Amino acid sequence: MTSKFTYQCSDCGKLIPAGEIVYLCPDCSAKQSPDQPPLGVLKVIYDYRTLSELSFRELEENNFLHLLPVNDRKSFPNLRVGQTPLYKINSINGQSNDFELYLKDDSQNPSFSFKDRASAVVSAFAKENGIDTIVAASTGNAGSSLAGMCAAQGQKAVIFVPSTAPKAKLTQIMMYGATLVPVAGNYDKAFDLSIEATKRFGWYNRNTAFNPFTIEGKKTVSFELYSQLKEQIPDYVFVPVGDGVIISGVYKGFEDLLELGIIEKMPIIIAVQAARSSNLVDNIGKEEFVSTPSNTIADSISVDIPRNFHMAAGYITKYHGQTITVSDDDILTASSILAKNTGIFTEPAAAAAFAGFLDYKNRYLIPKASTNVVLLTGSGLKDLNAVQSLFEIPLPVSPDMHSVEQFLNGKI
Ligand SMILES: *Cc1c(COP(=O)(O)O)cnc(C)c1O
Image (cartoon, protein in one colour):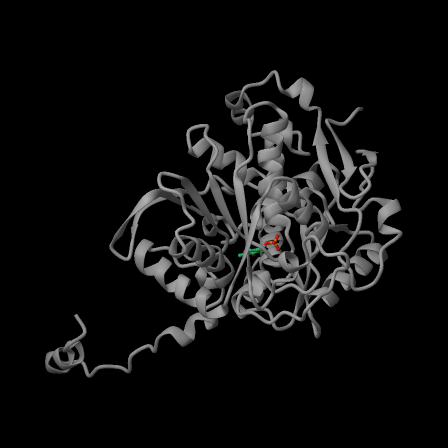
């Protein structure tokens, strides 16, 4: 059977037929040096010429299966993955916007993060190919997401995480019934171990950027944005960046639409990193990749060696994307502004994207009447510790009205 897709190496451009499971381009990954971003990440390409006969509506009615490595809708977990709300926000801190601001709330996914988009596609592919054990290394969200999707599908999940991952994420992994392997080391160590274990035990691996379908799953957000904006592309999309897979997915989704002739140009995508973990944006265009140890409160985007550096940097360069870094203080402030103005409480990594947006707004870089989207990638309940410095939970009040009056004095 011929497959509906082909792999293409994002570094050397070589085409690799779909069929057996491939992760990286064998030629490029053989040239890998230690402590450098992976070479040979594969891009999945489709028969765009034939598919261009279909309208966006037709693609959407078929759940975009023409553009995914999955054949049957029923192979997906029976949970609502993606199809997240896009909220229009008219004002911030009492000041009306003279542009359009939309928040894409991906904390509304089943495991409360954007990662479900990738895990669902990987899990569906596994189901169609008779695979029952999937392994992932994760800073927390990818692991809790895969654990949840596998629970919904009756598959086994083995999750490698740094033992310092936030407790809520570890708890999710345990509750979904996955095998949790906390590693006394950082994410990079967990990543390498998970790949060794994949080889040793013959499992299927979902690691971000290592498994090319993670990018395919993440691209679905762009199809949804195009649909929710009534078949228009936004002018700007603010994306939080760690390994660079979400941003590559956002680009890939719009690029698929470009290849199909559905859209004529790409939106401007703004890569937002934490200043204390900016290895992706700092190395774009550099001769040699140099990693600085990361230590931001935004654990989901705290990455020393971005796993999809080359593809993300390539997209940002090709499509004139922009980059910005935000301090941990800015992230916390943005998190609070977001929660108080919109009722959406996100984890720091997602608040980073909003901090990037606020910085653009404060520097008058958002053109009047432009359409802006901020991707909110994870729920605030996943990391309660991160925001503890913002407030103190009040001491208990004696259960009488007088004490309540005293307590409220000056507060409301
Ligand atoms: C994983 C993650 C990101 C960053 O995605 P990358 O693909 O690593 O760049 C951002 N926000 C949240 C909540 C995440 O879980």
